[in-house]
Picture (tube, one colour):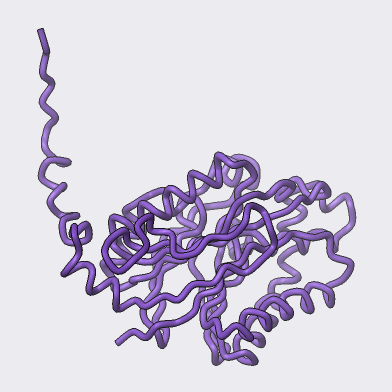
Length: 299
């Protein structure tokens, strides 16, 4: 049985870090702020971890492959930091996604999720953007996961993944009534693509979607040099929710937490009593979608 919780979706400001200690203090300050507002689930954006590259020499900062290689030496500290903060403040944290090198030398984009007792796991990004696959040479993930929390089951779609409906659908069918979308977009076009994807996933699955964005300028980085967007929490579009499906949304590119109360039991109710039943009616498209298309000549 799910319970209502407060969600904090981060508009995380990228910075040039003077030290690792500064980074730890920055993240803890943000976590403490959200916890003080009684948030239970805190979501950081895709690739916010990449500001750690500012700790390296200039020659490394301007080479994507060198950056990712050097980042591996900071991964254990990154995981320890978020595990400690989750325990200390008694919250769930979806940390900023991290490029992780596997034993075969390939890289995956991983979003780690931490529980209030410090345990953690991760979701890998499934579909790569052109920038990731052609320039970063990051490999696609091959497994979807769902995560059990004390307030219900959730799934993670990393940025571009939110634009592909079958991924979230699999997670929702596995019991996830909330989809978390950490994102990093460098243009308004990219931001709006992800936002539209998030709202479409909330509509068709009659679920909540939490969208977190990276904001700010990093001219020293060729990976996250320009970052725009608005973090938000989206809901089904039906009775009992807002008429536009926007539960909460931030100010354009302004560093902040965006808060909203999420009750996953409401998704179960709207799937039975809603004005429309998108979740139930998903299967009704299958027959027509798989049949041969009739090509009709009009005269």
